[in-house]
Length: 74
Image (tube, rainbow, N blue to C red):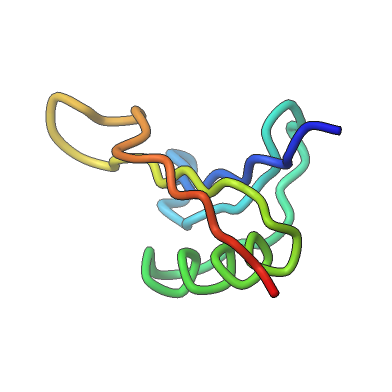
């Protein structure tokens, strides 16, 4: 079974940070700040031994994931 991939990215419509699972257009949760979204997503990924991708919100790399982080749980 393939591991889930969680994404954290900034939503253009309202500048909120969204968390969603790769392959789904359903947003799991919205946050006002990037650190809040990352912390929430890291905990979810840790619980499920999933991969976390955080997307850039500015500059030439806007929208691209800056690094994949495999979070290992218990």
